[in-house]
Amino acid sequence: MRAHNGDQPFSHRCRVYYEDTDAGGIVYYVNYLKFMERARTERLRELGYAQSTLAGEGLLFVVHSAQARYHAPARLDDELVISADVIELNRASLCFRQQVRRAADDVLLCEGQFLVACVCADNLKPRAIPDSLRQAFAGAQVPGPIAAGE
Image (tube, rainbow, N blue to C red; front, side):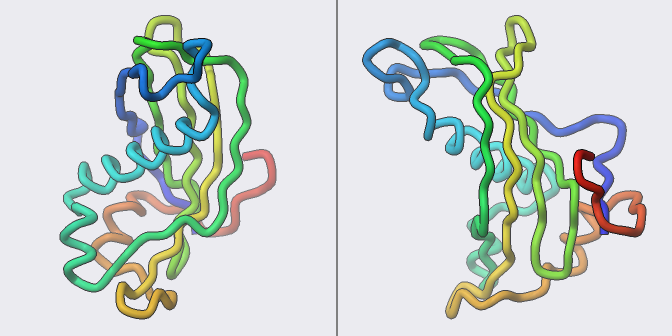
């Protein structure tokens, strides 16, 4: 089922630090995945769900698959804006579409799509996303699968 994020898409801001860059002062490619992970975590927090609390209740979210496309480099001291929009909501998984943009000029630096599975903390087997969390992510829903290219 599709998820609708309302009129205001979620975004998280962060700064590029020295530790995020390579010897040339450019963000090392894998760090974009870290920035996007933080945005997904902050998205949950904004909805009222801290990952530490969920883990204490026996629920974890784990990345099942990831796709990333790199468009332009971020550099030391850039401020980044990272989106984390749920585009598909299933019984035991979420699909996020994410973008990393430079705040100063809104240039798209990296974009990705992540399938995140809900699992039991003790055995890592899939489990249903709790109804309250599903409702928080769902908002206004439009039935049917996401078409390619949407």
